[in-house]
Length: 426
Image (cartoon, rainbow, N blue to C red; front, side, top):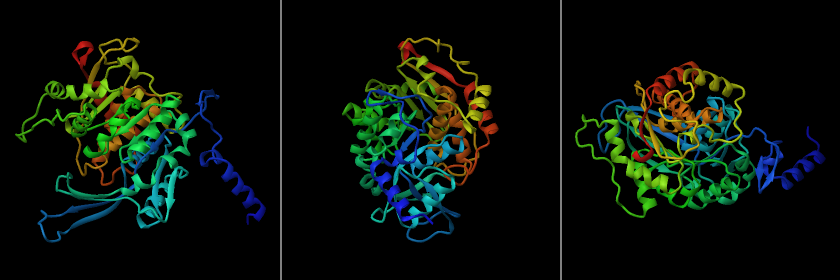
């Protein structure tokens, strides 16, 4: 049994050291202008950990009465889903979030512990009511209705809590923030990252919350909106309501990829002109537009200090073999020249069980691949492959990934990628 004197010493250590310092021997490579020896560091994710209650009726639902079906409790939350996906692809994320000591919180904590991920950054308290979202799906796996109770993330995942982990943020190869954070917490997180040039990935979460980008756009390296979130972000950044989603009157009609891009490029340009370096625009079955004003050479080495190791080195090797770097771009990716360009990466056909989690796994797969040392184009191809596996399962994140399958699917995406706009065309 631990002695009383030892407990007092441990208590003093925790009092004088930041939580992340007490248990970590790795320090940032650049903090407040002081250069420190380069070391491996974990990507940091800040955002929601949510318990999803997912209901799927077995027959057509009728109003004002219950309907037979299946109800599942599933670990969720945008940042949490992304973190779990990354961990299953060999990257260990450092999560900063908030949970209550209630049934929902205990379920999420147990699942987190089973993945052997760090809990240092997760704020836990009896006063916190863990965030819960109830989803009701239709027979096609699409979300028909839902209710979200996620106030705890804004109320308890505060700037003061996040600042305790400045060391982790400043040494991280990348910081991912989701828009569940309050505006003040978003700004504090992004400002800390900016101090050490840590790239920031912004996940919009929803149409309403995506507008929070307005105060932090200048700090953002990557943003991953869907079409509706793109429109909301462009309107928020331009301080006007001038952009509108594409009208799809005929369910059976399908726009060409070039036509889709032409209709969306004005909104994309607003994000790029306001400081966001790369827009990863997700379009469901129409795939992904990867857009930037920085020139294709920017895509080669965005993250700092990434060194594949362990399982992530296997990911690096198998994706590199399947998707040779810079093979398909018909523009000089080695050039340092800066100019606008856009690439389309297709979606993969899938046997859809449920669509929740697909976007999160696309981001998680992309970030895990970038942290393993792959370039952005290779990483997005791997992210699309990770998203395909997610929609074919019943949970937000697959229980496991097959690297061989990820590599094969990524190869199919990568080999079909197409430059749709470059230089003056964007």
